[in-house]
Image 1 (cartoon, rainbow over the protein chains, first blue to last red):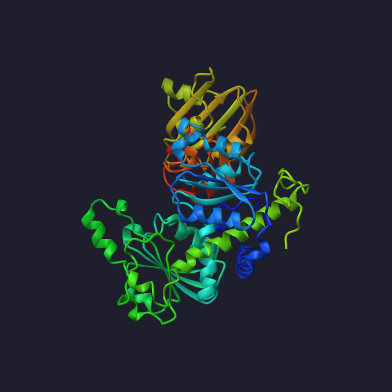
Image 2: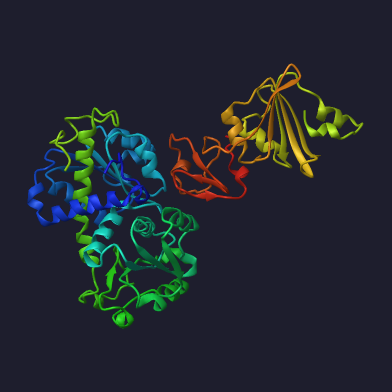
Length: 330
Length: 163
């Protein structure tokens, strides 16, 4: 990987993705081997929106690498409340830390913030834009359960506002995949995303559907996302539409026995709890994969950044970049 | 200098329209109704005392109607010419010195335009008071914000940042 920052899954080549997933697999197999790898390194957490899984898994990942985190805390208790710009906030916090993780409600926030800092900045969600670290843990889970080539995947739910969906769809164009997008008409993929998917991969096969049933039996993976109440004008309309995109064991009777069901979580009622104990369910494994994958990402970016000093590519500090700043990447 | 010489009209407005400039730029073959947007892109609002002539919806050989903008005392830079392509893709730029056209060139579409348009997406980071210059990729059929990736294909002139 030779990237200064991780902003969007569109920037990732197949080789980049495989580098991260291979590293994650190594760490997953022997986490003790990296327990002190980034001792004394500090990760800055800047979450301008609520987060449980993403924030806690980044924190866990950094601590499992021997490092630590400093957390901006909630927006209400920070200088943002006083009207500070994001550009100023990241420039201040980069002086305290070796890398930054940013979640922000505005689209393009991570892209803009990265223009103001020299330490690696990882996008942990920018409005309805991108969520590339989620994508990498999704890909890791797909690879473990179904493989990434010759894959037929159905992505269902809120495809309009779901940033995890957009990021995953872009990344999958690097592989031999058939992507089926299943949603109510009002929550279809944005035209920008469809445009990009066609631009990304000439061989990308994309189909849009309004129901799961016609494609279910062909799927290797079904990736379910939550349809949010606030996307609909009234409760009745929401219940009517959302109900059509919920699955239970009866729904899955028509599926392949090898189907893998994923969900970025949190779920509400789109996946019935009775599926949890079946072989289909991979969503908790998916959530747990956040740790080795984010460990791999942090390791790659911290080491990469440390070794690049003096090349003219960055102006980052060298021996302060992390505890083993000059250590060679592998 | 431009095909508005082809038309003969004895009224005073015609005289104003075709009056030659001594030194400056004539932007010809602008699509009808876009002249004020051309001025907005160039940041010309008259408050600096610029001598500007604007003809709108005048008869044209190439189009049924066209606009024409003449700016005295100012030669457009390449950057300024580039951004004109967004709203005046067929324009011709005549650089005039001492009443003579010394350069005449067509506009070419740039790869990007910076600081000219404002993003229409209210959720874009560039709309939130950040110290960032707007940046749009120029697509074959529109423009795209490089931050939030919103694509705009119609009414691009409405995005011109006149602030």
